[in-house]
Length: 249
Ligand code: CA
Image (cartoon, rainbow, N blue to C red; front, side, top):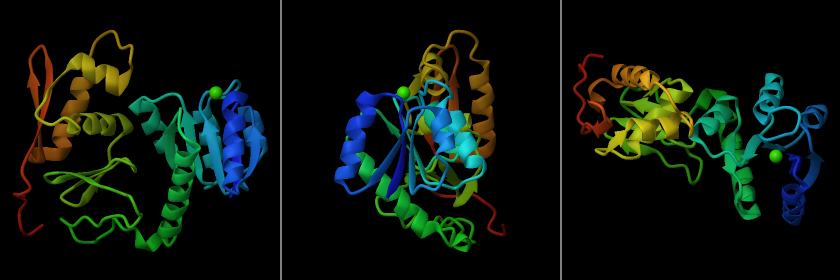
């Protein structure tokens, strides 16, 4: 592959470049956001650091995505769920948290290319089963879907399905759902949720959390129960698989 590596820190960029060359890839380096944008989009893969000296990597991604569908993996030391969600919402194909092994990066690059190759005829979206109540698994190797009764999460693609139909969630609602479903039946404190889903240094009101919980309750009906424990936090319970939807729908 012809790879554009956008990374300002030579201590990271140099071994990465050497490693990728060992796997037969051609590497062009950019050390700033401006250089990255000047380098254009005629690459097989862009590896984009988020912490750049001039333009934030998320903005670089947004600008690249404005006129290009180039394959793009974000590489970052920021490992908050929120950053990942924003990155993927902006159109990154994947998100890798530093430090990582070159081996792992190469595997992710290949997975992105495979996923794109298998998704290229747009009429054959594997999620479009056309039949309510049926979820079709993605064909990409290694792709797993997490099932919680009637709710299915594709954690890699940040997509959610209820009874087989996709539920479009804003990034923060997705992050909250992903966080709570990872620990069903556990009472999670407001502080833990705020620091994990919102910001590691959250001080202040947590009303926004209640708003997001209400939105999830509304969207998932009786497939999930998010129980509020006054003064403490929330507990998510998953309802069993049996659906109670009217059969005529
Ligand atoms: Ca950096």
